Length: 224
Image 1: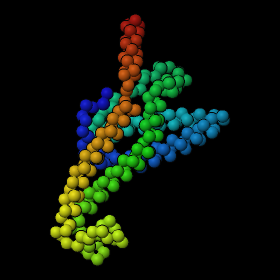
Image 2: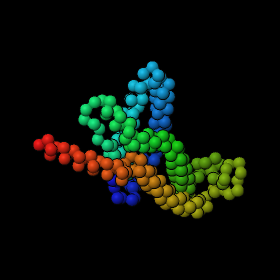
Image 3: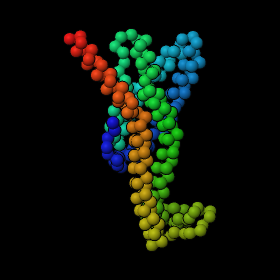
Image 4: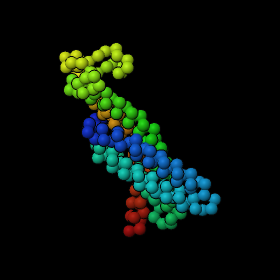
């Protein structure tokens, strides 16, 4: 189960959301490259090894992602993997492939790329606009012609060329900063919930693991 905390820390949220795009690009590139190579060469058995490596890499990367969510968003996600058979590599691989958590891990990393784009664009757009407006009374004098023109240098609907004229824009920037903080934490919270849903345990999995441990204890008692 995930942590009950609903409001992720602000600093961790910013770092987490900005990391998602490069990590999403890397994950998507590796998944498509290894997946295509593995499926294309599966007939000569080379692809089977690549696909097996991909499965292990995805499950390992999911463990790192759970740790990243916990470190930056303060949300703990339980390991959802069902216990593997004790004997036989073939049975163990069947267990990995039949485990729904493996495929939910894969789904998460495929979604990380488009989600990372949306989150990166929203965060950078809101924060760049907020800081630009809030700091306008300081830096407008160093702009071309010592003035700020809205909406652009060529289309001058409004001109700001004094500190007094820049103060209303700075007040608007402070308002945008508050909105940016709320947006950042909301995006991080939604991503944390998605990560918990895809990388965490489901109710059905918890019941299966409980039954597995109960059966294992009964076997141990019988063996004793």
